Amino acid sequence: MASDLIDFVNRWGEPKLLVVGDVILDRYVWGHAERVSQEAPVVLLRTSRREERLGGAASVATMLRAFGARVSVAGVVGRDRDAHRVRDLIEEHGIEQGLLLDDSRRPTTVKERFLGLAQQRHPQQMLRVDSESRDPISESIERHFLAVLQDTLEEFDAILISDYGKGVCGFHLLRLLIEQGRLRNIPILVDPERGGDYRKYRGCTLVTPNRLEASLATGRTIDEVPQAMQAAEHLCRDWDFDASIVTLDKDGMVLATRNDSARHFPTRPRQVYDITGAGDMVLAVIGMSLAEGGDFATAVRLANVAGGLEVERIGVSTLSRADLIGDLLRLTPEDKVFDLTELLMDLENRRRAGQTIVFTNGCFDVLHAGHVQYLREAKLQGDWLVVGLNSDRSVRNLKGPDRPINNIETRTTVLAALQFVDAIVVFDEQTPMRLIQEIRPDVLVKAGDYCLDEIVGADFVQGYGGRVHIAAYRPGISTTELVRRIRAA
Image 1 (spheres, rainbow, N blue to C red):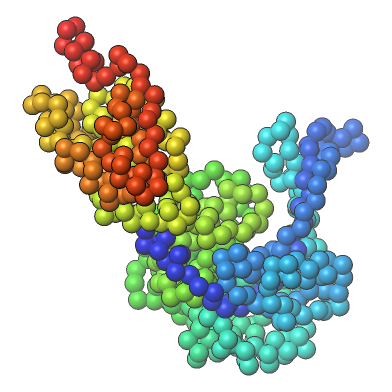
Image 2: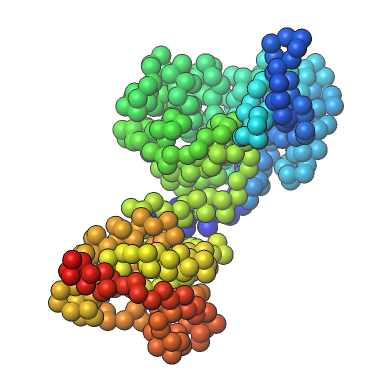
């Protein structure tokens, strides 16, 4: 269950974080890819809109702000129109930019992406054009960073380094940050440059390379999870990291720590639309988690969720705490059967997220069309449908010694496969009254062959302002009738 992660996110406060690295302006040009040009074998894009977002270190900063953190960004922009746009966007997001410096000798880094929509299908990236300098920042700017950061580091709960190889994350600057962070017990997290020199990261708290970056850094081929685990352990051992996390796209992540063997954290399959920003999101969530006192494993589990949500969106997007919690609340059929204690914890989180809880109950012995229609109608009454399911003993007491036809394992399996059934809890009593009193549903549902005064728990639910819904009754369809017809045949 994900209840521990949900509780952790609900406890997040407003930590203060510093993001150091390459500030980028992401520009998106959207349009319709209609035909091939008559002048050359290229696709013509008829533009429909343009959009600008913060990228690189500034992207990580906006993601942290969306989670509720207080954030400062340290980086370099040019003295050009794009720099003004970067500063405007940073101000709009409420990010402190006192350490965002101008350098007239270099352009503001811009990544311009062209995305085409063909036959009203999902847009695809067609081309990216980069405007940038990869030269190291000037000595005067680096000295300014060194002087200011040395005096201000104690203000921060964590420091995140976003190294895109555009010249900000030089050896001397990173050595100061890591050494001073160690002295002050401040976590230093690095999203490393592809193919970069890992000597400048030595001794940091954690690095988050992806599959290719880890392969280049270790000289190892990483096709399978065990190879990634070996690479993560190799990074910790060779570069004195407290932990290394290798992100493996559809295969999730592996975590190795200084004192423990690597562990694999699989992720739920996703519909991938755009991987842009996934690495930034992983860094942001891990930084937020460690700043709030979480351990490495908790940070990785949350980062898996956030990274998965990010690739389901086009371009670099922010997520909220509610987005994380909402995804954690999604269950697979195998997760739908709860004991009462687990269910009550889950429902508390759902109520915090504003969900309406619906409850119904029954034996659901031989599932038929009447059951399906009834449960579908029950689901329409709110956000989350809980089904109280009579145990085998309870069914025997109600229906006689030859029932149930199907045992509890079979009945829960079939019910859980229905998409409109969200949770199942088994009860042993003759009536569901105890469950209703514990769950306190917003809506209580029962089939139309019951009158209101015959529905167990109706008075109780209405007493605290809940609602009772009587579902449509479809006569002639019942388990008893089906069993009679089968035996007669």
